[in-house]
Image (cartoon, rainbow, N blue to C red; front, side, top):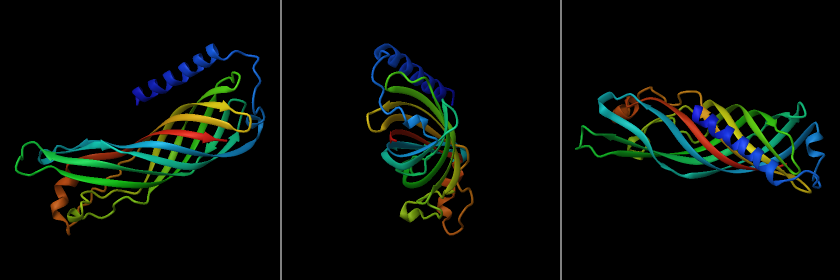
Length: 239
């Protein structure tokens, strides 16, 4: 968590200093009315990388780890409510698509080959975020954003089926902490922004209940003590 905060602060400060140095005052300022509106809307497109924060239990020497990171994508809409000259409240409902692959291995049992399962995700994301904007310099304005998000993974496996490659079952509903940084670019007819955001799951999404119909999946469930979601998203906002 500390590393993420440091990265965001560095991005925010470097973008602010860069804009101060490169873009001199006195230039024509585009689209000055967009930040004066009490309420405005837009849409967002993004690329994401989904991850699991896995804490292994070390039972029977089995361990689980995410071994591949597949790119995914996100789409959504933006509602921005102005609270203050520098603050606004944002509701950005959207969809996130991606997948994560978990590898199970046992270093003490070389006769049993490692097992792998790929979990696809289609997530309904409902974030409520507070946006802080630094002072506008010409047509650029860096900002920080943070808040909470409720997520529902409609593709999450809720029933074990080892023969079909489903080795864990997950809880589809959970909350996340979201923090990010970006830069608003004021164009003649709309505002464009690039934003890097981290989403950190606050709950254990692994269903620890065993399935008597799939006893061969017990050690896959036992091997994980806690599992939560992590997502990094590079977004492009159009407002």
